[in-house]
Amino acid sequence: MLRKGFIAAALLLSSCATQPTEGSASSDRECFRAGDVNGYSVIDSHTVRVTVGPSRHYLLGTTWNANDLDWSTTIAIRSSAGRICTGNGLGVDIIGGDPRRTYPITSIVRAPEEPVTEGS
Image (cartoon, rainbow, N blue to C red; front, side, top):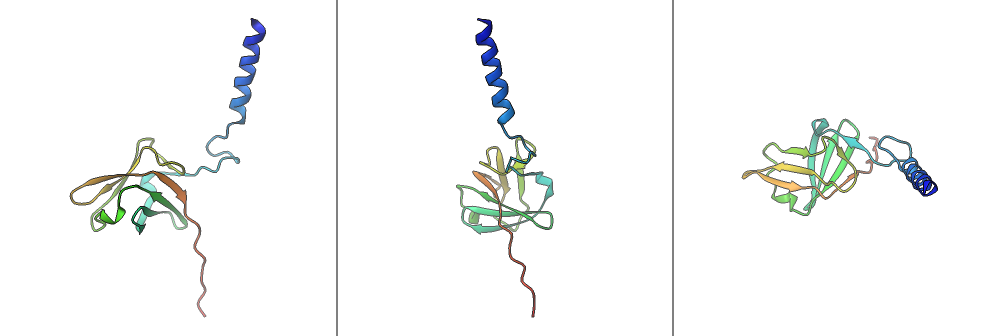
């Protein structure tokens, strides 16, 4: 009986040790605060691009039509976790428009960097 408990505990500990944690080198997950967003634009009917700082951009996907959001008014990004992280977007919403609507986010990915073009 003691041996079964030892094996179960060893398996549990080994599975915890192999899981990547946020901020670890093996984790591809990136996070930012909603307050760090300093710009946004509509990419297509289901994708909004947000800017976080001078060189970080993220694509937020939604099943709702982002073109219906009134971009002439202030928008807000809300996260139930306090931070917005790449992944499935669970608990993240964009809020705005007139009348005010909530657009649930279904995916968050880091946008590819745009090539820098030099003038001639």
